[in-house]
Length: 234
Image 1 (cartoon, rainbow, N blue to C red):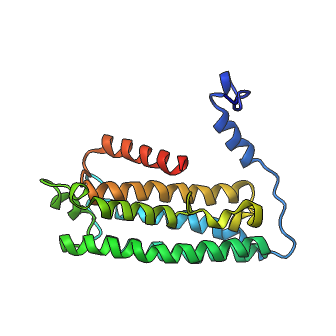
Image 2 (cartoon, rainbow, N blue to C red):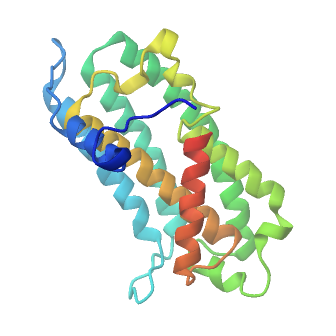
């Protein structure tokens, strides 16, 4: 077996934390012809929009539940396209723009299939509220009757999140690292925090829409961890 990093603490237990700290304190070299304000603000906007996704989740004890939560989620999802457009365009790099073109075209394409599948489920329960999926599935789960739809939605999520095997925008031999090639340090951290927050949200959405076990927080956490492991492993 190939040995991994094992220098930070005992046997490299805290190596990911060390890598995170190293990335945080990384020196920042700005591109020569960048649009500075958009370049600095766009990663933070991406993280902010990723936080907005979680407003539709029906937390226990929450007095306000968004009645049109899934429509709101579609709007936030479409807004992410403009965030990535700002991220790549502001750096004024050919590699970044090439990666952005491929990433956004793929994102919009699979967003259509994602919306069609979710709209089918919304019409099935006659509601736009995520909380009603829990009420509708108290006796039977969509996962067992609509398993093919579950697989199709999972594939759409993987493509929309630009994860393998749909990571066409990060062809390293041609595009270096895609749309985020010019970002370093804290801006780079914001972009990837946004990406992994969306992965967690997609896991929660699959759990709620196909299993309807909103109140089972322990099982939800296990499912999200397994979903993130699957996405990263792929």
